[in-house]
Image 1 (tube, helix red, strand yellow):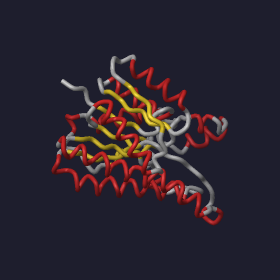
Image 2 (cartoon, rainbow, N blue to C red):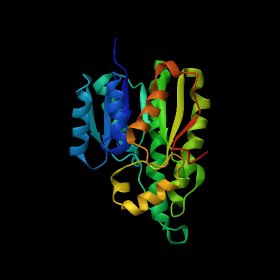
Image 3 (spheres, one colour):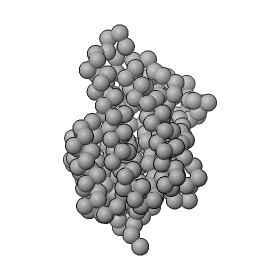
Length: 245
């Protein structure tokens, strides 16, 4: 029986890497998209292959339509199917709204919202023929609560939530579920650079009093990806230590 195939965008580091490894541990072949760090992507693929699955890497900027096509073509040419799409790739260009350039606003929306839309549009055609699919989009607590200095990022993630719910309604009859995971304050290279004092202040505002781990986000993604959870669609699961309660 053919293994399921999962595409993970932004899969070379952080949450994307954890998602790719989680998919591999569950016996799925993985297509790992990266934008610039080929070494990290190949390292993630190597880690995935320890689970006995196939893993390929493909460079591409999800903000570019032609790169989205390239990512999907690589998956189909390599494996002949796509069962799971995880739209994880994203960027930030933070600034107060009054200082934010229109170019920075557009750039974040193009990567964080337009890219997932294009990939969902392309991938859903394959999934509809298969009459099966799982799409998981990476939202954020910023898209639910808003965040000072993140007008572009929060708007893109709020848009992801609306896109998720709409796609879930449109694709449900074809046995395709569409859900979103909204991470909170997750430990990453970026948060490690903040300094311990700032980290402590941030964690004091979170009910569980700590940062989340990328693996905890990946576990939520894996839940939505499982065949057994086909009656769950159009949902947003916050992995945030209680920030959005």
